[in-house]
Amino acid sequence: MNVPSDRAGRVRPWVGLAEEDFHIASHEMERVEDPSLVGITFHAQQCVEKYIKALLVLHAVDFPSVHDLNALMKLVPTSAGLVLKVEDVISLNRFAVESRYPGAWEPPTRKEADGALEIARKARDAVRTCLPAESLA
Image (cartoon, rainbow, N blue to C red; front, side, top):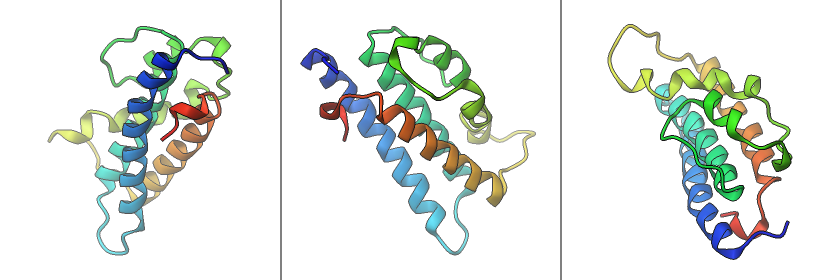
């Protein structure tokens, strides 16, 4: 992929932040006792959000400051070659905001946290195949 070096340079920080979220969620899931299921699901969503934003930056697509994966995925150009679909990641949307504040929501279960991390892993792999090597952390 022939990408201007300045654009690849703008993608790299998004990849770095996405990787940080992925590693936080992964490490927390490895805890035997009392893992933060809210933390795992939140960081899984954040990983996917930031990887999608990295892809949008790569393709010079402006995006709003939102956490809505549906809205962000709709902005990904078909020319990006992303095999990921909105349906693959949309279940993470609920972990972006509602779990960060007290309210009438059900905390995630261990099974949901496992599922969220698996979605993040698949999305991460899918987006990384669309990014130039020089932008990967």
